[in-house]
Length: 227
Image 1: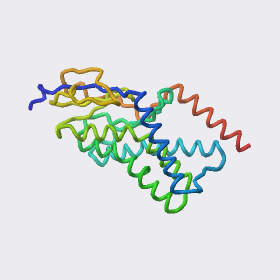
Image 2: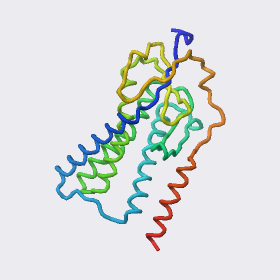
Image 3: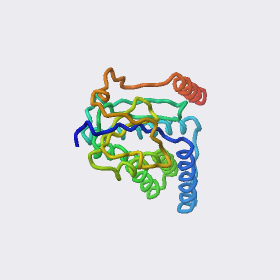
Image 4: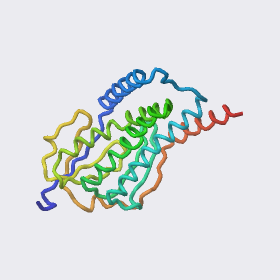
């Protein structure tokens, strides 16, 4: 079909169902980990462990970026951000993406530092790596939900950013209003115009003011714990 028949559907994450799903997965994974490893425990300096956790979550987003590159996204169009007031670290690709490209990116953190590292932590008895893997798997639950949702759509579907970290756009000739999901909702539908998705002045890293404050407090905590 021609591009004139396509619609752009703006999706927004539903935080309550997403948080419930994440909590359920967290509890199940911790119980499973305790069951298979009787000595499953975490010890060490609280602040160092917390900083390590944040870095691991940053690696999650970096792997999304690697997935974009593998799928064919231009490096100059990939950007990262921190918006802790929304509980979000994010990686955005500011260009139209094919179905294959977005699916590669969505599954990268789940597989590489979720499933694979969990298996490694079990084999080599690394409880903190197992904990990090669990946290990542919980954080990747919405990636997995999106992966399953998009994988069921027509192969000509196009993914794009909306400019907001908790929203995304799907461009399709299908009527996506009939494709319901418990975890995100369509908040806008408009005619597809290619020029609307040509992004300019892309900022490579964006950190919100609240995030600066929180990160500053964490850094202070680390310094004080070392002194």
